[in-house]
Image (cartoon, rainbow, N blue to C red):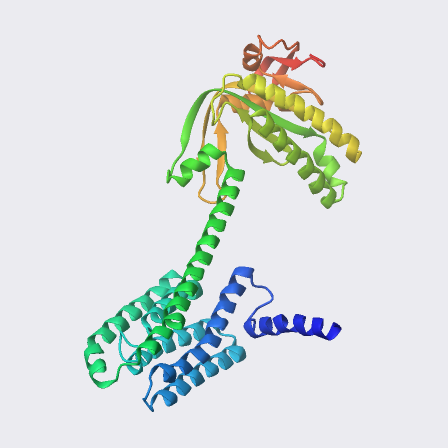
Amino acid sequence: MAANRSGRSSAPSALIRLFSIVDEPDEDDDARLRKRIGVVAGYATIFAPLTIPLQATGLPIAWPVAVALSGFSVGNLLVLARTRRFDRYVVALLTIGVVFVPVANVLGGGVTGATMGLVWAFMASAYAILALGPARATPWFFAFVVSFAGMLAIDPLVVSVVPAPPYLVRLASYVPNIALPLTITFLLFRYTDVRRREAEARTDELLTNAIPAPIAARLRRGEQRIAESYPETTVLFADIVGFTPWAQRTDPDRVVALLDALFSRFDELAARDGVEKIKTIGDAYMAVAGAPEPREDHAAASLRLARDILDAVAVWRSQHDVALEVRIGLASGRVVAGVIGSRRILFDLWGDTVNTAARMESSGLPGRIQVAPSTRERLRDVGVAFDERTVDVKGLGEMRTYVVRDGS
């Protein structure tokens, strides 16, 4: 039983070794699969020419031609295994296809004879898309068109010289020469389309992770410049107090891991509260409510997120034994927003509201939420209690601000 199990497991391994003669350890799965398909096609071209004598009944030249074409395929695979030059191998494989099909077509009695080789010729150009890429595959499609036109042109002569194969031979040839290549072509196109859709899904995911979904949708529709004014928003800034000196005396891996865990939690809370994360700047976190999707309760939503952030930081401190606090600042009003850059694009905000929110954070108190008068005004009907302060705000001078009272 053990020997049988060993025999069953060794057979697939032997096949994989045959198909993976040009695999490279550092290449991705897609490149490896493309190469293996090409190698399998090479093995197929060893045996495909040997069917010519069966279809070209009564022609002595059929066997020498079949053996010569099969021998070329063997040599092509041997050169590939020695040089590992896959592109050269593919070009040779496609070239022998351009030669093989017209020869088989003539020996099989013409276009309507036994070989039905035109489908194999088309499959070669289709495979070129997968192996060489669309640009380099185009000439091989034109080679197929020229070959097809040439076979049509000489078909009357071929029919008059080469005897037609028996009906049963022509009928039997439909399986290897039509059903099989069309099935392979379908599988190649299906594989290519599946990979394309997977790549598009990954691109969409990356895009929507980098910028808000409505903005990503506009970019996908082809908009080149996106700039909007949002009259009613609330901008939130949260900053970890004392983070820089703590990071300097802490192992870098621990710093990154803890910051990633905390900001990932902020992301979850922002999504739950319907607030749009804009970016992180070092140990600062920026978000906005009311852009790019307008909402009437933008101030209340931002305050809700601010409170959730304070709760999350308290849990984070307890779990990781970190003596750090967070300051949060809010300001409300008009902002200008848009997408900047062509690489590593970013949806960003500008305006006095953004500057004021940043100043509310920087002049705030650890573990507290400080809001500008603009936000305080929009929270009058929410039932929030504030402690009033007068602070000297950088760039804005002396300013009356409001700190959310604990427990309110």
